[in-house]
Image 1 (cartoon, rainbow, N blue to C red):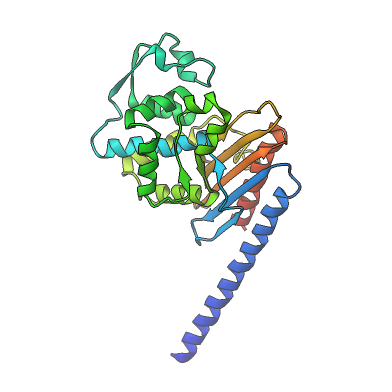
Image 2: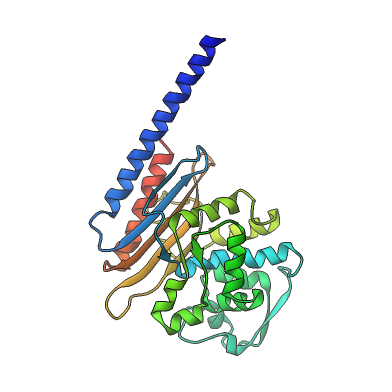
Length: 296
């Protein structure tokens, strides 16, 4: 019996050493990808299989931009789970809800507004197509950014703040920094969502599908992954300011591996002097490094 116990201890120790070496190797690769870039980059990777977590600048604060539409969708769907809203219920969208000079496929589809749309469609277009007007319609439904902030905090996600709408961010570039997260906190929220700790089965499946159908950011997390890889993700982008800086190019997501397992990855590229192509490539290379490590 003692001999068996010793063997088990040895095997456990060897496995621990192997995982530690793999973690160190991936962390070095991630750091090397970031090195020399004219940007502040934070990344966190979590392997759901063996529960390894690797981060570079994982505890720093980064502006979320549209990444926070994921957080918002969780808050709205929580109201659905509680019976206070329903996915099929009609939401009346006024023309005044469809602000100009902002990204809004919803406005393009219904330029005159004054249309009743199911809540499910507003959530879908806000997530899958990153509609800014849809985002603010949802904020109004749940009582504003502070209500969403408090909801996320109750999920024990501490390193995250939600304070402003899309409309407010568009009025002043500085406001975007009031909506922030750390890469580790973004991954933790993804983990809780994936593990069914946030929403009921049906609403979880609805949001997963919307994230898998995301059309924005094809060159970010998905950029260097094999064609057809399923990624449930939410992107964020600030645009370039008058000084040539890009405050935020982000992507967080759940990546399905060939064996059916998942990895979580959250990448935030902030205050970048690089081109949009380079910013996207940074995210793509980090995601590919995590993928290569996962399929070894």
